[in-house]
Length: 261
Image (cartoon, rainbow, N blue to C red; front, side, top):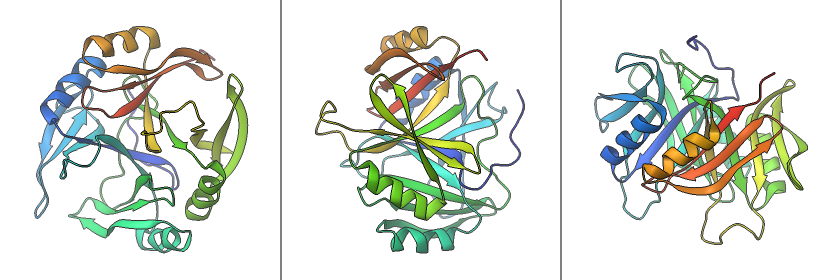
């Protein structure tokens, strides 16, 4: 599999799972997507689990940390590549967002910032020093897309446009729903779906990652055998066949089998 050596500014570059039960999460993703893992120790920070493909020494695809607060829901956090975290922090605050973690150096690896958009959805940014982010994307068992579920899409369009310079393009991807594609220089970098009245009231808006698979139906069925629950049953859309599940700890993720081109 080709390894990624650079992520373009404004694109998703890393995924971070906050889990209340790391051992359960490692077992689930290991069985479902074939991930391995090792523990990364960084001075002054908690140990961090790195997920890899093709063995422990294989290329990285995502990371995991233990939930620091039991009141927080299990979730995936999407990181977006930027050239200057400090500048992004200013734009987040100016656009009505809030700061969770101020710009912070992670040893020699890079610089992070973590934020909430005006609707309370968390996301993070990454300014690389020596580490660009995930070393595999757009390949089987790796991230292939990220999507925001938002109850107020116009506010989300405005906010992320001001923060990342994304341009919103609406498409009718899934039945009668309008789907937003965010683009930079003509390239699609992320998506957004409207959380209408059919979504459970208790579900917060969030960013969820999609992982590429060969057979969506089979992988969704296997996820249930491993303790997941189905959020959206497998269905066909223009890019391929997709489904959304909630892993055994409660974090949502998407699965996509791309349509052959």
